[in-house]
Amino acid sequence: MKASPEAQLRLLELADLDTELARLDHRRRTLPETAELDQLASRAARARDALVAAETEFSDLEREQARAERDVEQVRVRIDRDQARLDGGKVSSAKELESLQSEVVSLKRRQGDLEEVVLELMERLETATARRDAAAAEQATVTGQAEAVTARRDAAVAEIEQAAGKASAARSSAAEGVPPDLLALYDKVRSSAGGVGAAMLRRGRCEGCRESLSMAELNEIRAAAPDEVIRHEECRRILVRTAESGL
Ligand SMILES: [Zn+2]
Image (cartoon, rainbow, N blue to C red):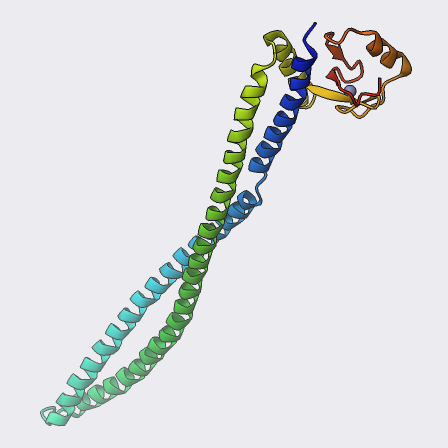
């Protein structure tokens, strides 16, 4: 293939821009914020689960407490009623008196037991409240952190996109100076040679694969016409000659 030395030099510009675009693409795909957001998402899921569990425990305990308080109240009403009957002096049968008195005793014992249950439930509710508050606080913390990291990531992506837009525009104008057949060859080599389609021959070395060329290869290149498109046998990249080639 033949192409003017100017067109060949353009390939070096293209190669620089393609390297820049690849670097930007890699940066976008490996932003540390992406990993941070993944971690925060797992933390948020754990916090959400903990909050749901704590809220469920809290409302179960509240229900239990209401029931225990109702039981205490019922027992208290019965004690009051029995006591009123005892105090009213209308119960004359000794047997009935005795039975009422023993009922009051056992009701008072029951009242004491139930009040202990209420107290215990109050303590458990306190613990559950603390757990619920901690889970809610963790959730708020994670949400805040995720917002900050998202903003940082969005800013980084915007910056990368701006740089990529500039590099793409520069690549388009650089490509305009390259004949279609040479451009097609460059793109083909680029896709099979690790993203770099053309490289400078600098002081007898291919800048694409960093290999030095043999004396025989260099002699062949010296003998080639300036518009001959040269490929490096070793890496198949297009070798572009410049004043620094050492020929
Ligand atoms: Zn090479």
